[in-house]
Image (tube, rainbow, N blue to C red; front, side, top):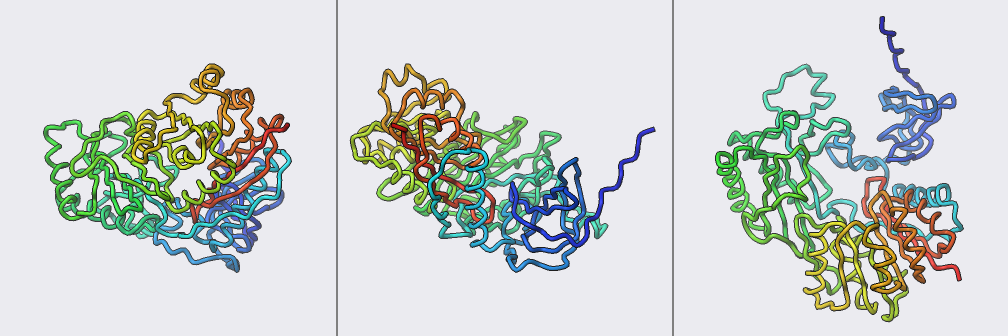
Length: 474
């Protein structure tokens, strides 16, 4: 006979102590670390434990006895459900405080390298409508809120367009209002929903792999351009394409500001479309972004920092820390669409950019040509395979390396090659201070950290960018 699980405890009158990893708060109860989402240091609460291990537990607030003086009123109607913007309950000044603390703790605890004084974090000028890219999914299995479930009501319409619920891969929260982007995101998304419901278009069923409407991606730019890409799932394209085209014509008519109206037919088991052909329904296959006197072509598969204004501040920090004089050979690793490479090119003798995604490298080359930059070279491929001793023998040892890797940080082979190349300076831009700290420890034998500058790119989340300058030990 199976042994019954013990009921998980209710913890009463618990004071939230601090902010922890992944945007959660933390309290300690009888030697147990308890992680709590959507709580603020200073809150006094009752906690229902949802998951318990030997040394830690995860819990949620079920009652407030006292709300912290640090607490702010969330402004989004979907706060606490969609899983994003977890720090709306914290005033922005306190968010910056905890992000600064996160960078310092991770560099010291994980990196264990000698550090200079860490510069104060650069906050974002805009804390709402700061993103230039959003993606929404469609589902015929709408997530029901706790209030809807408690009502006992039945719902005829279970279709939704919005964000995936964390931990529920087949459930979508129907979003009516999102503050992460200009209101164009709300108007377009809500219009698609209304049109689809009125015309009987089917929403995607992730378990069955059927349903015409699968996802949308929106991009905006400082030039005022708007890109909309719609992911359809058309197993019977000849039959379903007219429905898709009718929807796109409706959007083309109602939203003349959409300068790139694109679509893709995705019948795969995942939502990625990097390996699929993107079709143009109306307008261009790209939009343009601007930074200083540069213009950047951004396509549907391009990587571009999602906070345009703050990206400019981030790149200015990186450029400043390189200390370029115009005589240097610069390697820009994980160059994406060549934004940093082209941004620093006029201050260098030559810039070589390397990136995994071939389409991004083609954009990087176009961006150099558009801006009449002639001292850049770009290569596509796996970083650890391209950046090796043969590559350095052919193109020369870099004087300065700029590296902006993904969250996982740099591969060990890449770090070994950097140590062999022995550039005079490395500027390391990171979206994950924990893996950055690990890499700094591996570079410490030959490099010392001489500057640290955190930059907040994502208000109301726990994510933080960090720029570190390393100088070779002579």
